[in-house]
Length: 92
Image (cartoon, rainbow, N blue to C red):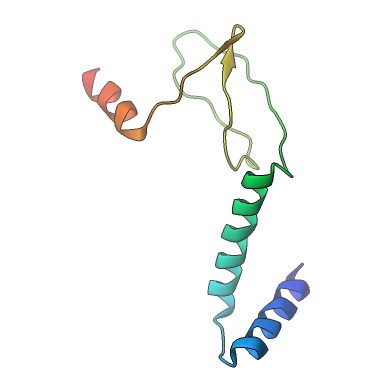
């Protein structure tokens, strides 16, 4: 993969006629790959977790990019914003 990324960077440099920072190029390439994967669902998979009483947070798989749905006891969980999570934590 590293040589492929280097080749892509060199092609972009030839096209733009400017030097491109390798670390920045890799970061942009990774972000775009995640964007394409999430839009197309090409890497879509699923995972299951066992719930534990009085547990509010669970670890996600290391390769998890995005959580699409959460289903608990046949009910789909509603999405909440980070602001709502913060407000709930502040109430405790």
